[in-house]
Length: 340
Image 1 (cartoon, rainbow, N blue to C red):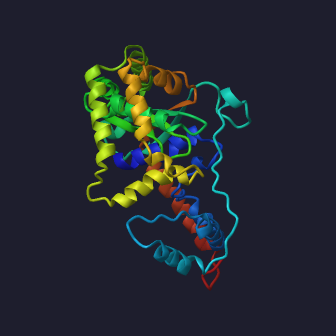
Image 2: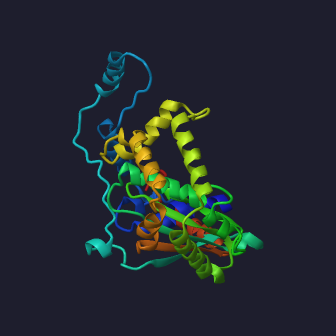
Image 3: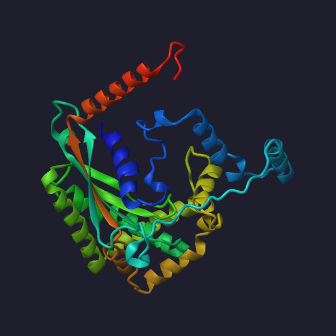
């Protein structure tokens, strides 16, 4: 149950709440209850539009002959006609900056949803999931800011002793941490953190704890030893580029494509040397790097939604009954040949 609920919490409810006006509000895997309403023609049209190679990106890695690469592409692409396509993803407007229609309210908000809890389940299985979530920015971040936010994320959540992680885990308010910190795979990065196994009455306390700890970190910062350890860990990882059993070429592609699919320079995400040196120089000079980041992108950012997922012991039964009624209605509509 828990793994499934965390997926729902992370990829459906949160994104619907944070991005009510662009494509991120839709579940990328489709909503099972709506899929039967699609016609075969709609499936075909969707595939032809979005899976056409004109909407693709092509990546080669290795010391091979570029002429052979082009021949491979030609053999495949020669069967298609190029189409004008737009890969643009609409930016979620933020009302306190743009005043645009459809923007989120200029103040943080809360969304409550329900998940199916099995009858007779006890303990954690009958408790809430609480996550505090932000959309960090409207515009693409420069490489140094992205890198600095990555360090901040590691310092707050990256180890068992990281202060935000430890504060939540030691609070007694929930069973375990949820939310992966910064998610930069979307056009607009988000930050999410919270707890599962929470008594519903303590949802406010989880939200307050996150806010209070962020205020403390913005004011007092991190220890010199924690910052040094973060630099050593992240810089070593960047320089070693050890992807283990995962192909290195695919790893580089995934880093590059995060910018490329939004029509940004694909080389920028893998050119981090200058940004890292600049960032380390600021730290060496005693500049407060992390406090301003916390204040700007989290504490001073009202594009925040707290999502509370509550258990519902009747939801699974209700859903099954609705599906049964729908199937019976569909059977009744069939003719003798078994078609509608």
